[in-house]
Length: 155
Image 1 (cartoon, rainbow, N blue to C red):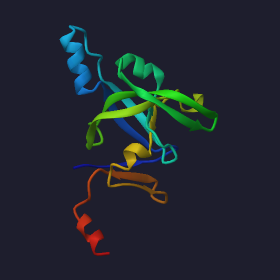
Image 2: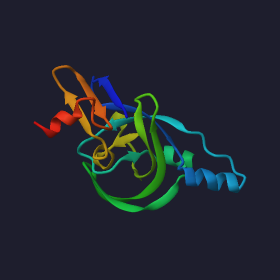
Image 3: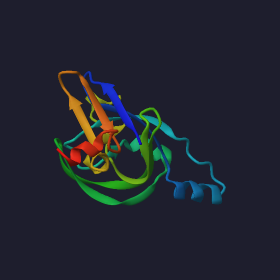
Image 4: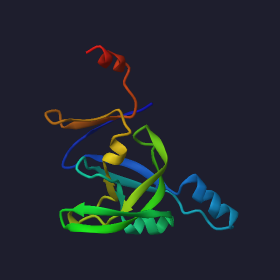
């Protein structure tokens, strides 16, 4: 369905939009509550991260449904955090959305404070490819095989 290519300066950044899941939106509507507005976010693609994360403030804004807990291992140590159900879309990138995914609540380090979370391997593995072209200073994400993807079967 989609292919997104962007230049790389310091980090591999993927623009996205995060919102509540369709089920949570239905809950808000049926209770007569305002549905939290979707938020434009910038995620750092992190192939070393097992899970996709979002910042606590963003998850508070969404009032997302709790989905359990998980153990996280970070450079700062090991701990447990809550998981939340959210919807993740990529209107600017043209990639297929994830209507219901679990993300971990994790603050970003101060040096990465301009970003809203990490896009981890849990979502990267659902796409066809994420290709970093170092010499060209760019990366490409494909959510499905490209036009000539069938050639891979023969190579």
